[in-house]
Image 1: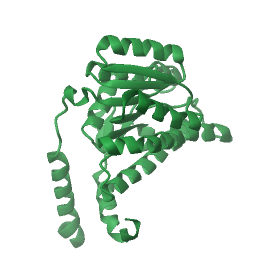
Image 2: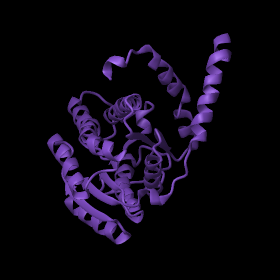
Image 3: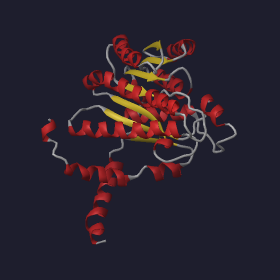
Image 4: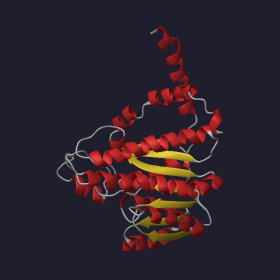
Length: 289
């Protein structure tokens, strides 16, 4: 108890004071002329992010599996004022495509400022029993392709001091029934990208990583998948998309967007940040520089 009063509580107070005193106000002009990739952009949250970015005057390159859907979104992006808008259709089950897509997008825009990783593969709700293939496919699309895309984009993002947005879920912060394969991928995203963010800080790599933790959002896919099963109220996809962009532009570590403010408050645990910070002292990192 004496240790808690003497050391831990003052550290917590100082940490929270610093964290909340460095909040910058978002301005749409932050995105004007920026070069942005959005994955999973033919519908849902990805489509809404593409529209917001276009209204802010950004360059966008979009990808998803549906070429027809992407054509419609790109057309609308140009109407909304995008500095430029292109699409490349393909599946993130193909890691070669994922890597090649980033390089092609970089050539189309002449660089890259922001990478928004938003795509997922569909996983039906249900108790997990023995479907190993569904776990493997979910991990490949929802996690491993994110690693491939971010790795391919990193050289361009280093040049622009850019940002990565990783769209995740409350299912990647807490246990929930019926979504074991999906949840596994979202926990993996947190572990991988939070670690890489920490390594960027230690190595002085000026590329931010924003983990976006979302609750139920009223996309067509989510509403169809949860109909008759999940009774909580969904949050609007348009506002969700904007909050992801804001948080990424402001280079936040995490963005929480949920219909209930209590979920965000309870899951955004400062204790983890403090322990992570203190644990750095246990490593001899000089050999890695």
